[in-house]
Length: 355
Ligand SMILES: [Zn+2]
Image (cartoon, rainbow, N blue to C red; front, side):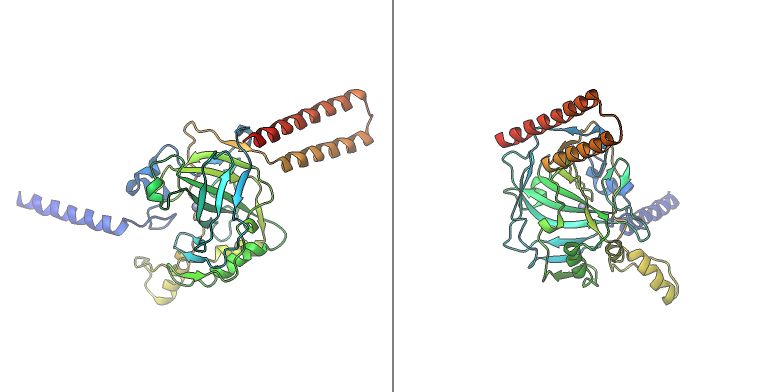
């Protein structure tokens, strides 16, 4: 009996020790609580409407009740705001006194105020860092602009609503040239050299500068992609990516968390330094895609994209016709197809004007 008590006490102590060692630290790899374990401390991470998801373009339903997004105040610069390295990402906190409001887009009379924006990017050497995937493929980076439903101020106030937060997701892909708006964010990020450090944004881009031209978006209901994973997010994923240079992707991949790691197991100072640099790279901060569990993704197609598609089709067809026989049948088929697309487009334009 006495011996048993000793054994139980020892087991209890070990359990307490293990809990202390592994509690509260969540992350994406290494010794932290990794995505498949998040639910142990944050039960909502095991919910049925989780994010991110894989968007399969063939399965997306065009929803005529969705309308163009309205972005009030997005032309204001982020100058006066701050950039924070929170160990999981770099986050822009918006300038006090400036309001960036998201509405339209099928939100009805609801308005959402932007709270912060942050990024998800890949580990060095990889170009797959987005959270949402398109047809099973990651894009390099994903930016999230997190908005809260008016009149609320804190995530805790809206955590039980299915539409308490609206997150605008923007993909960053590799293009030919440097993106000057993203560079302004990277210039600030370079000044963050300590854990939880903050730097003032002296020359910020506007939010509009960070968005693509096309307003085409995908919509579904999901969750925060980090603990506590509240299922309170209306997701709006812009279809067109913003382009950045390869060097700018590398600059993201060099960003470190600067958190002190006490249990890295290194024995001499040189290898400790190596281990520290590796462990402190923030990249790879994306959660794996989650099951749909019956959810549906809908989309709104920007009329600019429709018109561009029609123009491309007509161009392609005209070039074919000059190089082969012009038959009346082919011309009439083409005319019917394009007329149908134009009709659909006009119907959608009138539907959105009614709202
Ligand atoms: Zn995010």
